[in-house]
Image (cartoon, rainbow, N blue to C red; front, side, top):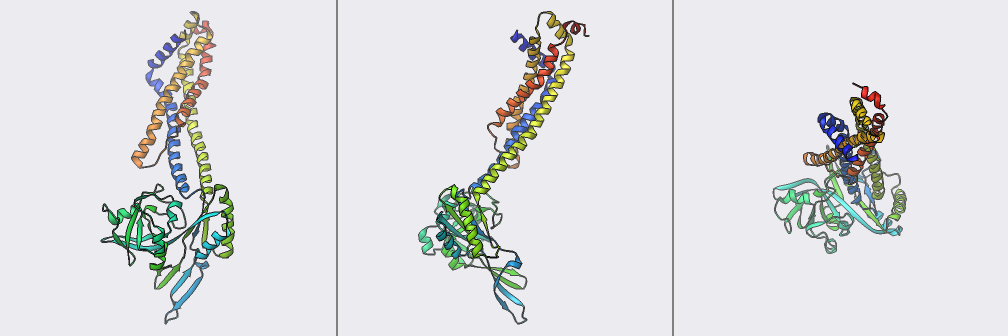
Length: 432
């Protein structure tokens, strides 16, 4: 009897193909939207979380920030014959003494890695980079920032001690300056000084636009030299022209990355560093502190909330699809009243009638769920191929959406099925 009910349900659905498809359409769109929206959201969130994670969960980052103009202390002012300022030196940001104080005062700090930044013109024959970011670094910088060397090597301790004129290029900088030529052991100009290329970094996964005091930029275009070499040959003063006057900015250290022993010490270290810097930089707004672990926790919390919002929106689509199935099945019950009467007269029980209509409803929702899963998996792939947007299909979204679609089919199919089963057989036979 159960097998005959299954065959009868399938025949009735195939008898009205267009109506069955339109009934399933709400479920198809609901299931596909659940999978596609979660995949697109997951892709963007993973990229953001990865950018933060690369900063280091056990790191506390202190950056120099140029304060507002009115808060800047001008250490030196020279005047021309007219008595108007012709040049001045603006002094702000982190100092070497800040680095020494942070490392000597806080026992939780395992390693402190300073960075100096200079904006320089970089040239290789006819190819050049205007106002490129040249970073003075130490050998520990590569490990702290999770950089991978594709060719050659990174800055070493002997380079640092000997103020060697060597340079490591980001992947983007190597492409801009050397195109398809192998840059290793080739020379280039940084400002007025000649440097030898000793290494090229692999493309950084964070790619671009990691926020910070140094701005939004593509880190693959960064250029790395030993810090001692940068200080000796470029210096700490950066020239900035402002109309007829000339400004020189002195920013000794652009960034200090403090690495602690474990994640439990991050918050404590950040609080101690903040207190120390507030004492030594009193009334100055020339630094900022960033804690990647806190940003990571916040990003993951926002990710969970975002997934919940997207799932709720897609769930409404599934609910609408379930209501559509119930409406069609109610119409089907009315349309097949006489058939129900005939079956009851031939000995079919109420449960048999309930089972028949419930099977039809489940078949509609399950088929719609399968088609929705196929469409939902295809949409993120199409978005990635067409627009270059990273997507990541959440493994549990497909079975969850399918299970919900079948569950909705059962819930919304019970009422029409029971209504059909509770019909009076005699009245059903009289129905025209």
